[in-house]
Image (cartoon, rainbow, N blue to C red; front, side, top):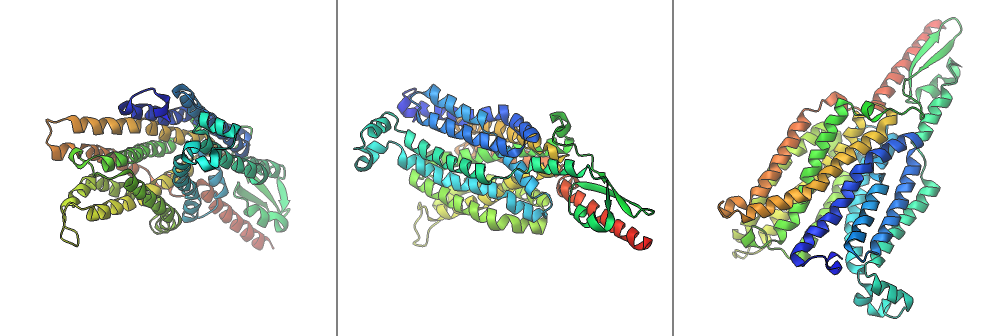
Length: 487
């Protein structure tokens, strides 16, 4: 598309493509916190539905792009109007507030799972449906006004299909998406009007609500007085300053640095696989790179559905997160070894074949994909676990998303600069300069691991809501004991 805009020659196209890619993350950085805080006030459902409307609008406008400025503004509009990622995380957190850690991990993994599916299907839609009149003249070449329109706007069809998928999501959300935040607080507010209830009638029902905190038994009347938790109602959400506690800031900063190393690696992968061997790459063709990325997409699905819940249950979320970050440091450093596998004879005794290179690349991709899957989902759950109050989830998730968006905006520029400068520094020996980018990436991974080791398990491993449930059960047991002693 950018090439068709005629804004630069072939060598400069990548620069303008990078601007379009980064503008979404930059504009999302500006509004992510605000959408999250708005969802704390008016509820998750209306913000999510509005975000879908914004996405539909911006995608259609992007398909109508005939200039670089139009494309840039339409992608920026999508970032401004769509804060759904952080709000969806808040909704999943509220839906799983009383579940076990490995169950929460399985629920949160559905978000990147859907993103992974979209990452597989989306590029296929864009690749196959662009320029439909030219590529499929028998189908789109004799439709009159539609043919003329698709000739004038050759990138509208894939955008229209994407907008249609979003419209299906919007319709489904209007009819079936249930509010979690407003119902949560309205129920608490309604129950707070009943300060005295009979013990034998209602104590069991109250003990199942995770938002009560203490119970007091009156031995003379046989009634129970309910002391509600100080969590504010929907009309008094905390300020952003109150929401960003030290534990929240610590995990958000760690999340930001992991997002930086993840986008650095994702940007570096096509660079070193597509570059020639003389320039420190693997010399893979676009089709081979696409095949490798498709393999990574399959690994993502397996990792989300099976590996992540099992390892979370076995090691605990924070410990698993730290273990994977440590492994990633050595994974990044070992990337340069893959190109040396050209010199290893294959089963026919021939060298300079891609057999062992493929084996090394797929093994590396498997470890990297599962590791990043675990870390992204782990960061999301740890951020929600660190949230000081239930009605601050939107603000906290919006802030964490902004931290990640900021790093995703600067990550590709850092990666491209390091890769280009290292290859052009002829004063440095070839075997060293072709590995500089991986050393820098490992340095970012080391910083991320050090930050993760400073996270205190008691602030992140146990969800806030589960602590409330424990207190409720203990209070309920004390009520039963008091009742038995009275009778």
